[in-house]
Image (cartoon, protein in one colour):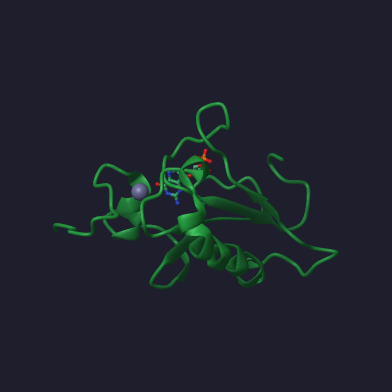
Length: 124
Ligand code: 5GP
Ligand code: ZN
């Protein structure tokens, strides 16, 4: 299947997940965003929220992305509760975005890690 979206990188793992060429356990989907469980979770709840458009990392985010990023941030607390994080303040969640090699980024498609659930966690 050919994907003609200009904002799609055919060599990108998360673009392939968005295109359903690689299976994932979906948490949420709309026209702009996709959320799915991390394949190697650090915490009882650990999912990734990504824009469907291929943005390599936070290092590429500019004012042109301000509205998109605002909508992405506003999804975080809603999806965290939906995915099983307990309510604030007793529960809560951790939001992490690794950026670049020294930032610990492995997959070069912007993603928020959202982690939560009872401690101890495997990491973090
Ligand atoms: P990064 O290190 O780039 O911040 O995070 C990449 C995350 O993607 C890691 O937590 C890793 O477990 C997850 N991941 C890598 N490949 C896959 C995959 O094929 N499916 C899913 N669901 N998660 C993946
Ligand atoms: Zn991508």
